[in-house]
Image (tube, rainbow, N blue to C red; front, side, top):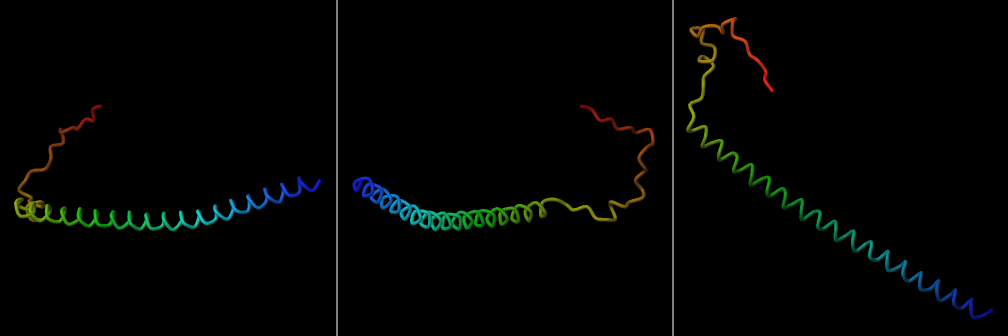
Length: 92
């Protein structure tokens, strides 16, 4: 009768050790994932900033090459109205 009790105590001790190790592993993993999440976030922010810079450069270059249309040209009344007979069809 004394032998099973010692077996139970030994098993309980082993399970307690396993539980303690799992708790330690959980905290280590949480810290590691947190660091990794911050690293990935910083990398993505750098990529976004680089892309925005490149887009601004492209926008500046294209603005220099294209003649912008003025509001006066858009509102020019010398251009005739669109004929009423013009019909647009939506095709699939």
